[in-house]
Length: 291
Image (cartoon, rainbow, N blue to C red):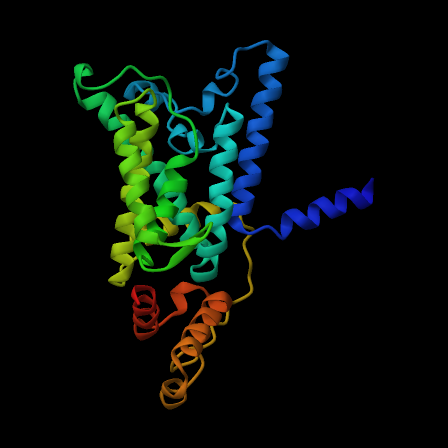
């Protein structure tokens, strides 16, 4: 039994950040399922305190729900689809960007989706929208990551059965289907999807200009996490970053072929994170995504 516990503990420690998000979603889903069964509640009531309410004043009483709704699922197919997409997106994103930056996009997508949902149902007259319940699901965060990837690397291709499809085609299709969905039964969910998509698009376009719009959010989360860290008297020594291009001097780097340049930059990202790249390295990576 101890061996099984250690194996599970080791596997959880080795999960990447998005896989840990998946694990948390699945755990909350199971808790909701168990609570609903034990209390004899109909589906969709066991996790009400995590849902994002439609009414703004109800939201003020549950401000945490702007994040927790993104971890709340009641339907098996809903969580299955969201977590499968999140898993496959994590393969690409975490090879190019740091874990912190990826989490920034994901959580800001959830927050943006929630605020778009609240805005529409509390500002626009009721005659302009359908009657909906509380908001649940991770789709806004998932959409933010998907659209970010499709915008940042629009000409990269993924294989779908026997054909290759450029990422920007996929991004456009996602947005079009969500816009059409505004006229269906899941209007509230589609609004959140579009809010997440907008965040992903803005994040990518600004990052291409060298502006990380999630840096403020990252500082906020860092400051909150520091409250729970024990104080250390040891001084942190910062080593100077190696100059040049991905560990090469300018002459050596120019002698590499295009693919080796990209590989060198990606290797630097895997070791030190996206933030460690110079402006020139980011430009080379961005141009490779466009080619």
